[in-house]
Image (cartoon, rainbow, N blue to C red; front, side, top):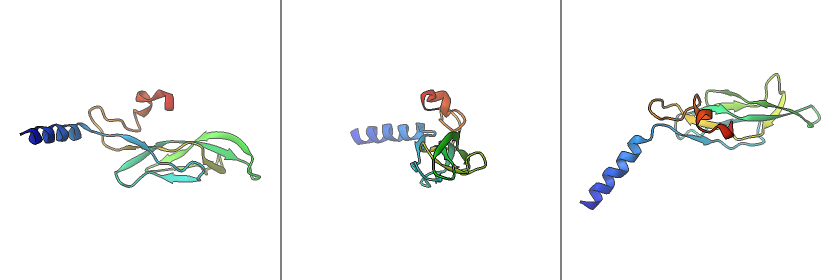
Length: 110
């Protein structure tokens, strides 16, 4: 009976999980794809831009499309990730944390 109660409580907790976010790693790389273990969406990251001689020039927000954040684009032709991309599940509803509301829940990281 004890085990049945414990199992029921554990399954209830798993059912209540709607969505979550994680980091993808990749600091210093030109781009980084979110983990493929779950259907993640790349939310945001920060890039350090460099000139042709590898001198830091400025910072920009990464270009995050679908499940990858990129640091090489027109405004930052020699960019590398300064922060690890934040990747969130695409699940919506309830109290889910997604790319759309991540900064509402964690403003200190945005």
